[in-house]
Amino acid sequence: MHHYFLEMLMHVTVRSTGRREFWMTVGASHQSNELPLLVVEETDDNYAILSSMHQRLIEGCKELAIRQVRCDVVEPGAVDDTPVPWTRDVEKAPYLVVNGLEPYGTASQYRPACMPVAAVVIRANTNRGPVIMLRQRNEFSDTDSFGKYSLITSRLLEEDLATGLGVPVFADRHVDAATDAMWQATRTNGPLGVPIKAFVRAAQREIFICCGLDVSEDRFHFRGYQTISTRPDGSQLGFAVFELILNRHDPFDELVAAEDWDRDNLLVVSQSDLYTEAYHDRLNRLLTQREEWLRTTVLVRPLSSGD
Image 1 (spheres, one colour):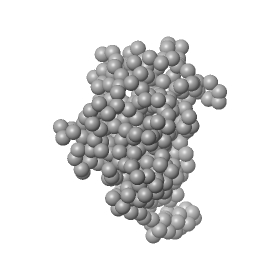
Image 2 (spheres, helix red, strand yellow; image 1 turned 90 degrees about the vertical axis):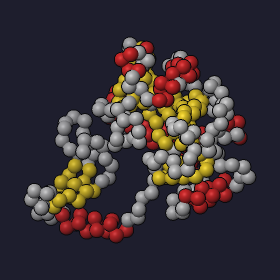
Image 3 (cartoon, one colour; image 1 turned 180 degrees about the vertical axis):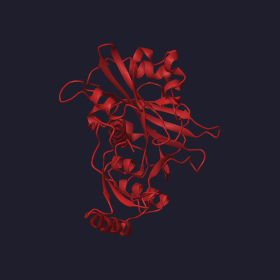
Image 4 (cartoon, one colour; image 1 turned 30 degrees about the vertical axis):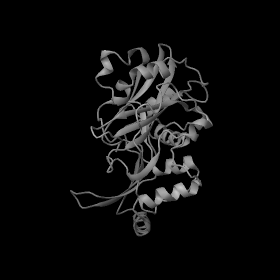
């Protein structure tokens, strides 16, 4: 209940007394431990109004289906370990080819498969040198590797793909029909590839949720693709890796703002300490299995706002 919730209305029954209440979110406070909620009890004149509103919401609601994108397995050697430039040429031969959708957070039901993921290396300058921001994975926001430190990552959702392709979201259709409808809407004769823009949208959403930062598309610098095997059957995670350099000047200090947003799960680490004994056992697969690539492709770059 100490997390930041947006536009939430809860109908609560207190077990000990049977008393009913409505809880409404009114925003978050970083200055106190008070819950950011307005509580309306049954004796309040507004209770009947909220009860009527709550009933209308129940009667008019539909099941929310969040679906993630599933892709074909990437063959070894499909991409070099060198950075891929963010140009139109990338889109001509898609690195990841869509073969379906499935419920978010599940392991692929069709083996083997590659699950596309946007990964962001957040870097910033400080008086002690370059730092990198990591997130501690937990059961409330992640699907695996709980307790490990990772980059800011997000699996690609159906709406990310649709936005990247510039087509509608066909959420009311079965997964096969929805995928085919997106393919038809793109008016292409080739396979349905995942464009870079789809990964950028997923990255923007996750940066906002995890760090409270609303970052424009042009600030995400694409550094390349990386694929990691996750199961003996050949299943994979296909990462599109971006670099984001935080602004520490006007209009506000983004590093401080992100730290204040979630001090329980965000960790700022000196780049020189990232791969030391202090953290190495706590890092997740992408950070450990692609250490050399991250060092030579991202972490070696000077900290500037340009690409």
